[in-house]
Length: 344
Ligand code: G4F
Image 1 (cartoon, rainbow, N blue to C red):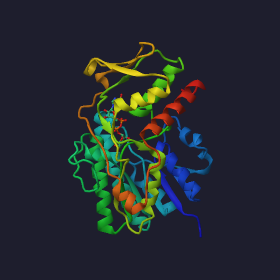
Image 2 (spheres, protein in one colour):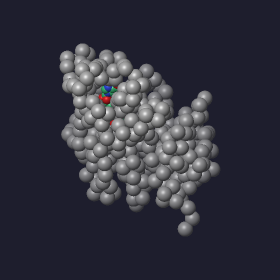
Image 3 (spheres, rainbow, N blue to C red):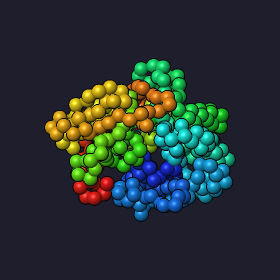
Image 4 (tube, rainbow, N blue to C red):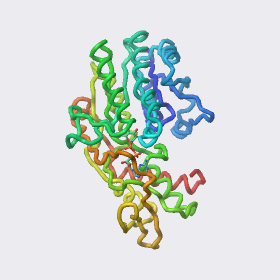
């Protein structure tokens, strides 16, 4: 049997690296799409040891003809759309760009698939942010959406256009509603990696400054990215496209993430004060480790996310392997090693 070809957009991101690794292990030909920038950042692929095994092509979600050419050229068996302006905070500052890339960009891809490669199986990276002000606990595939950011609104459009192309043109198009998923390759703008990278720098004596965070009480359902890419692949192996929630079924506060990670850097945190005046003190040294700053509050917040992975477990046979405590430990230890080796 000839090798399957998969296109992955967003190849330089956390999920792009994990998914590419999984597909290469399964003997796929992997085409990695990236957006050209002044500096090329392929460090995730290099760190995963797969940079040489991926064919890289330039790709932009805003360019119709570029997308069409890529799809016409490769006519892939599978297309995973992981590219996006993926930081919720930025979407409040760049709502139009976010809508264009994360929303309309998906229609551009689907149009090209419909026109030039209708047998391609399509995966859309949808998000638990679409639940926003949650209407049901836990959130599942049938839970109504209530987006709370330009990012979530754009992703909601992308989700529905994926469903619409599945139903209208009979495309094998799946939407994976993934809850937060993290790893040592997560970008440092997200709260988990921001926390572990900063605490590691502190523990290694590289900074004296406290970690400045926003809302410590927001609750997220955090899983491990390496587990979640497996679910993406499984969706495209089903007889038909569908929508699936991928989550752990467990919710934790930002505060808990900080506490659990800090332990592995040798800190024991005690919280003092309230709201913007709250600080986290290391009980061993009395040093202020964490400070709350309104700079990191969002105009509208998603207070609680907790997903039900029941459908993914039953229909895809998917099961997460790594839980919350282990995730904190893996991320903290990886950043401590980087900090001690001068890589942070
Ligand atoms: O880590 P976050 O920035 O992730 P967020 O906003 O939940 O979005 C991530 O997960 C989504 C899946 O649900 C993806 F769709 C999305 O692309 C992205 O991957 O923030 C998590 C929580 C928020 O409630 C935020 O307000 O942490 C809170 N937080 C508190 N202090 C902070 C900070 N977030 C960041 N980034 N930085 C802070 O200092």
